[in-house]
Image (cartoon, rainbow, N blue to C red; front, side, top):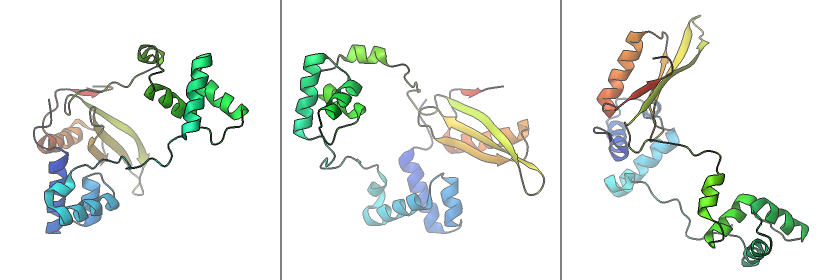
Amino acid sequence: MPWNVKDTMSLRQEFVSLAAERTVPFSELCRRFNISRQTGYKWLERHAAQGPQGLADRSGRPHESPTRSPDAIVASVLELRRQHGWGGRKIQRRLLDLGHSPVPAPATITEILRRHGMLDERQRAQSQHWQRFEHEHPNSLWQMDFKGDFPTLEAGRCSALTVLDDHSRFNVVLAACARTTTQVVQAELERAFRCYGLPSRINTDKG
């Protein structure tokens, strides 16, 4: 089910509100929200300039594409495809042999072919060795695991407990734990439940 308590915008708004209160050191606040100090300052500056709307995601797409392949290269790519039916790697090799410069990477050549309708999307899909699966909504599945342990200066050991939301890849829990007991895990999960809501399922390696 979707997050019923926190979403991205509300998390950023909460961060800005807590930063304004100055009850928690800024570095610690950034650590709690799993962001860098640079990102934290960015959200504060946007909020100061634009209010809550400044916390929305912005498109990273440039207005112009200075790295776009020259028209002559694109024409050569398409012609080689028509003549030989080659893919990106063979076309790149042939362009290099013909003395073209600069020559796009094979992945870029494949994208050129796709843009011009010269790839069979069904064959392309079948040729893919794998495709990452993710759940459709946040909180559909959390994946929980201890990521090993390491010694501390106090002669103890520290184990990293991680709980990852499968849809967003967001760490709802990232905790340094001195023990790996049920009580420790339960306390961390209860904090995550109060903050992000209940997941539909939790997946663990060893239950």
